[in-house]
Length: 416
Image (cartoon, rainbow, N blue to C red; front, side, top):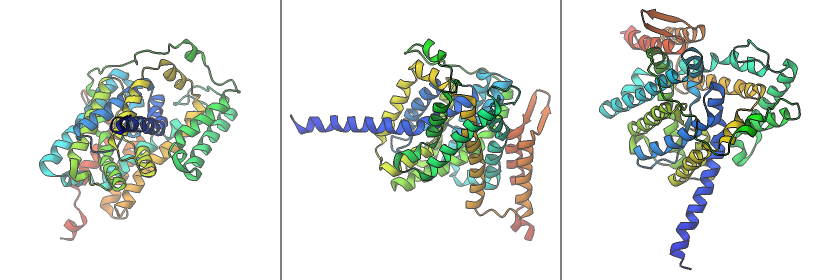
């Protein structure tokens, strides 16, 4: 047989297997967001795959990266679903994606420096911290076997605490002590161990899995116009938009290529924004570039964008396996609670880390004032209303932070 015909086939097989491995790495974090927020995990799988393909198209298939569910939007999605329902929440998330598109246009016209001047770490760092801290009570309630708001006890507290701490412990242990590819799936490992312990305790109800068909179209949900959801959610996009810069710099350092310049941060942000808006049009969570996948790229030396294409294709195909979605819905509350303790705490730490890396002097009165107002407004649930217009919580905190950063004089100006 002619080697010229067999080699491309062998390469495609290898790429597809590596793509399946990439999806495995991203899977735990990918489905965690819809499971926590009440969205459909099958839709999240579909929109992650579709979003990755859209990102590749816009960036010219130059970056080996996978897009999936963003943790930064967990708090506003939970609030939005409880307050306005899923369709209205999707409207707000779609608008958040369009904010990315707007920022990409500004970068194309003025360069990336203008965004960093308006949204420096002293603004984005505290906003990221608030996103993690505002969810802390939800994580604790679920770890104790209650509903997220703490109103109903679903699992006996002692049993729930044992399960949640075991899930938490496994997740931490895997992230620190595991080697190779296993180290990249701490969330998935924690869920699997906690789930396995719950089965003999009778805490897993398999009836949804038995009743589900093997193949079904995901439960797509389309947006419903709601100004309140837009005003609440769009300001939250400020922090993950800036994090996008860090994600692209990380994958650039891994591959040895400067993606900030080529294809350009404007195109990567545009790809992220369009992918997020399209995901929201179908009922999926916003997309973001996944650090777990960047870690896999570094470990496995996967620099071929085609591998990410295969991961996207597998995600889309799995979205139509209804029994998988049903199985994910059976994960007990304490298992999720244990994972959430680490996850939400880690989000808060990311915010602190951005301040540390930027060398922000928190003892400077100006910086202290900006950070203090953002954190208290966000965690305290400060709200502002004027007729039909209303802002509250994280969204209000983000906007106030931007305004304070623009109007408060800097140290040099004061000295002058």
